Image (cartoon, rainbow over all chains, first blue to last red; front, side):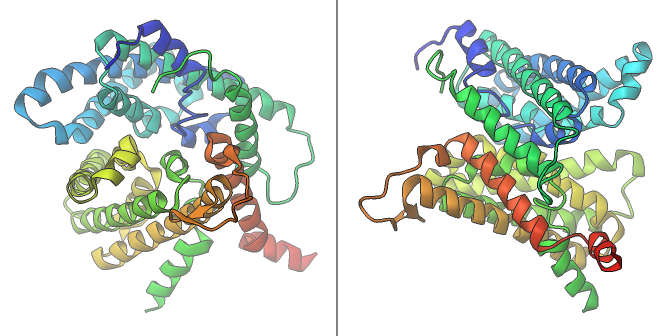
Length: 196
Length: 206
C-alpha cells in the first residue's frame, strides 16, 4: 500500500476522520460527560494520553508477539487487556498525584476501558496496516480530535442550557442532533487530507 | 412466566438499550447505512449478549466481586472472537464491510451493562433470555435507522431498488451526519410514544 506521511494521518484523524464525528466511536462518554467544559477537557486529555500510549503498546504486542505466533485472532482479547491494565495504571497515578482531577473525573476513568475509541484506534491501525510512527500519529490525532469534539460539545450544551427544547428531545436526543450538525460542519474539512 | 414477559417488555421498549438507556450507540451507528449490515450486526450482538449473560450468570457465584469486570470482559471477548471467526469463514464480504466494528462489540456498553445489571443477580436461563431480548431491542432500533438511511440514501432496501428511477439519492443520509440525525429522531419519537412511567403518573395528577 502507499505510504502515508504520519503528519497527514495526524491531521486527518483530527479533522476529516474524526473518531466521534465520522466513525461514531466513543459516543457513550461523549453523551454522558459533555456538559462541563473543564471535565470534558480533562477527560479528553486522559483519553488522548491513553490513546497515544495504547496504540504504540498494542502495535508492539501485535507485531512482536501475536503475528509470529499466528495468534492474530486473539487480538481483541489481548488489546482489551493491555488497555484495561494501562487505564488502571493511569487511574492509580491520577489518584495519587492529582486528587482534585480524580474527583472530577470520578467514575469516568474506568469507563475509558470500554471507550470504543480506544479499542477502535487499535483495530483500525491493524486493518489499515500502519507502521509504528503512523500508529502513534493516528493515536495522538484521534485523541485530540475526540477532545476537540467533546469540548466543543460541552460549550454548545452550556449555551443551550436555558433554551426551550421540544418535549422528548431533551438530553440525549438534542445532543445527537447537535452532533449531527457538528458532523456536517466537519464535512467542510473533507478534501483537505484524506486517509482510508 | 411473569418474569419472561417482564423481560420481554423491558427489552423491547421500557428499557430499550438504545433509546431508553442510550447505551451502545458507539458501535451501532457506523453500520446503519445498509439494512443487511445492520441485520448481521444486530444478530451478532444478540448472540454475544445472550451467551455472555448466560456465562456470567452461570459463574456468578464463583466470581470474586472485585475482579468481576475483568472476568466479564474476557467472557465477552471470547464470544466476539467466535463471532469474528465465523463471519470471516462464512461471510467474508460481510466481515470486510463491518471491518473493526465486529471487534468493537466488546466495548458495546449494552453487553457489559446487562452482565452487571441483570446476569450478576439472576439465574442463567432468564439471563440468557434477557440478553437475547436486549439484543433484539437493539437490533430493532438499528434496523429502523438503517431502513430510513438506506431508503433515502441509496433508494434501495436490502440492496433491492425501491425508489423510482427519478429518485435523487440523499447523499447526506449515508454520511455520518445522517446517522446522528436519525438516531436523534428515533429517540425523540420513542420518547413521545412511550413516555416514562413517572411522567405518565405526573401527567395524570395534573
